[in-house]
Length: 296
Image 1 (cartoon, helix red, strand yellow):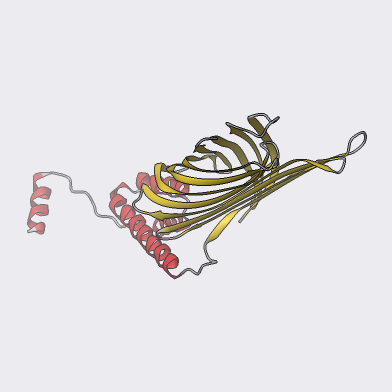
Image 2: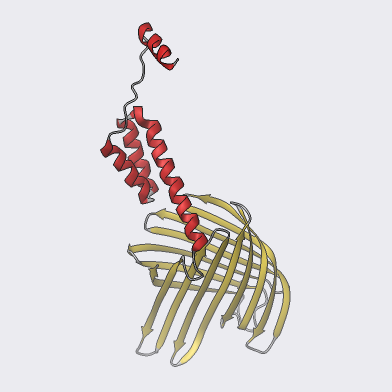
């Protein structure tokens, strides 16, 4: 039947598109681009291949789809068989300064961020420390640490559990523990940009340096924004909110640029606001950090 139709079209003068296979060099180029995992490279190669070989557009799409399906199957299988210490990635930041002369001042800034993605679970460890001493006396100490585990419900929704620790001279906090759980929403998930929103109940236990003790239930809200401005440059903005009898807000805006993998430089600005700071202390404090980072 197909032969009869084609013969009829040929006799009637209607042109019939030639089914020309994709040349081996072009096929190899498309396959290598698809295997690379570099979306920009793949898009460019596919566009050129289709422009020069329009009759093989369907074959090009099939090659790309088959390789993508195989790579996804391999990724899922690797996640299924991964051990507890596998698939961790993250970043270590370090910075500091030393001043001598009329005053002896030393400052140290450290940061650690670890992330492990699984099929359904995602684990995150974050820690930072900013310490400054003047003439042998510590006049600034700010330590934050948190562990969070997320359970994926759908592509956009997840539930989380989180445990946090804080010590902050500027706010008069000797130690603060925060336990929380709730629902997360991946509001934006596209190439180069991710925005997560979280909300849920929390319980915090605060001990101030003056001996005052305060335990309270709270509402916790969070916003995590990641934007890859360029292949080597990333902007992040993290906001954490606790609403209780003594509410607090913490916001960190950071910009990092890769010098050469795995090294990068970064600058961040953190603002912390406490509704009821310890007597004699201000509600708002800020920290600016310049660091050298190592990504792995």
